[in-house]
Amino acid sequence: MDFAKLRNKAIKEWQALWSGDKPLILIGLATCGIAAGASAVLKTIDEELARRNIKASIIPVGCIGLCYLEPLVDIVKPGYPRICYSQVTPERAIKLIEDYLVNDNPHPDLALGSFGESTVENIPKFFEHPMLKPQVRIATRNCGHINPEDINHYIAKGGYNGLNMALGMYPEDVIKEVEKSGLRGRGGAGFPTWRKWDEARNSKTTPKFVVCNADEGDPGAFMDRSVLEGDPHSVLEGMAIAGHAIGTSNGYIYVRAEYPLAVRRLQIAIDQAKKLGLLGDNILDTEFSFNIDIMQGAGAFVCGEGSALMYSIEGKRGMPRVRPPRSVASGLWGLPTSLNNVETFANVSPIVTNGGDWYASYGTETSKGTKTFALTGKIGRPGLIEVPMGITLRQIIYEIGGGIPGDKPFKAIQTGGPSGGCLPESLLDTPVDFETLTKAGSIMGSGGMVVLDEDTCIVDVARYFIAFCRDESCGKCVPCREGLPLMSNMLERITQGDGNAEDIEQLIDIGETIINGSLCGLGNSAPNPVLSSIRYFRDEWESHVIDKRCPALVCKALINFYILPDKCAGCGICARACPVEAISGGKRLVHVINQKKCIKCTTCLEKCPERFSAIVKVTGEQIEVPKEPVPVGANK
Image (cartoon, rainbow, N blue to C red):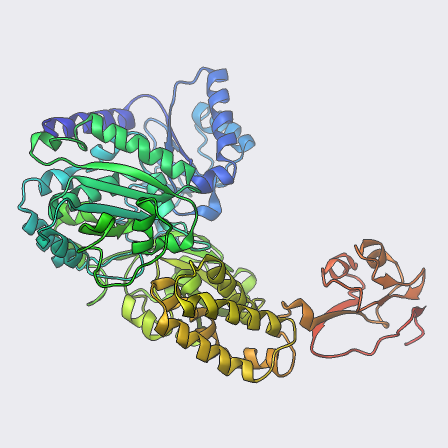
């Protein structure tokens, strides 16, 4: 197969698509777009185009990262620039077809931005959007721009050129280029990618394996899913280059079964690549062969750990093993295995194509390149971002993320998934790189970032993540198996108002024991949310265990609702709304909440008319109110 002919054909088809006389309509059909209603928008567009007999090309694309603005629809009308419209509903889709495609009104009032120079007034450049402007897209370079189910789109955008170049290089030279790039594993550990490849290559044992870890299990994380759904060929190509570098024809992708769209698009991509001779036997008429099989995980978080993942592929129970030996010496079936995650592989082809020095020009001295992050929580612009290493947390939260909704005070950011740490406002100027985050008491992890505001209880956050890690622990090693339930039980007691001053030091001791004594990364980092939050928010922990107060008014056992006698009008709205009949009182009587019956559901607080605002939510303090209903005005 002549790659030059293959690429030229794809480029011509791509150019004909974009410069033809038919409108193009791109619809974000990744999981986030579908969840926001993109499927209904697609159906409406199909029907409306057919009704009006408009010939147009519809291109399903992946997530471009602006998840909070989905569904996203881009329209390219011949002679006009590509214009993006956000939060498109079926009704708005009909309006755009009528007003823009038919009547030449591009609706600047509805447009999010234009790709390239816009000839239409009042439409800004798309990549000038504040969430996108600071980003550098390498791993996510094609997401939102190509049809992930059409290999020719990927090839036309430079895809498989890296593999073609790599096959003309000695494997050692490919590894040297990756070494120059400074690429480190993006799955969390940050191990130098070149070193893993070099050790696997130098092993005399055969056969060898390349494995892609796509078992993304962190709550709130969707970096790998977005790449797999939006640009699966970038991962396949990176794996094939790795196979050439270490000297193997065997590849596996271990992906969680809860990602059905990613699995489907991966399989389509594999089949297409095989058909064009870019995977399979004698790739591009060379002696190199490489095959990739998809293995679906059953949802065990611990299988994100390398050795547990490989046991799972072998059909065994997913449990970490003692190391050494490391996987490059003894991995799948005891054979040399190079394991990297989705994002790592997505970076490989651009590195080979553009050179290691190009990639190393981004980032910091020890953390090169870019990193994707799933930005979630109390943030104005949640979504997927890719930024140069070394950017600060403040820039991510305020410049890219748009700050805290309602201008509420920032409290903390939790980085690195359930095993990450909670960092306070005083560390907002911390550069985001492997070493600095670890020094601060957190981790890079695979890229989850959860922003917390003043309404978040830091103790409750720690309780949630410890419970998650407790449930996901495989139970193999004693510190993790016994220590996490012990910590979880203590945290439950604290949030129920049954904690004591000694609990804080005991949590620190247990947490450090788990970190030092556990076999794998889950146990080694699971106590981080507790240890980092005690380190930076000790006063809030002491409020819970000493004063029996929850300053954020989150822990139900530590809060109470009261009806203020001087504000209650005796309307009875709260009593009628209470699901457990905990409120007593009649017409023109000050109502009273039975604290023993109250389930702290907040319904009364929400239903009390704003003009009265008679119900308050307090913690750790008693308010003098009547014990029985009294006439309105009696206490004035």
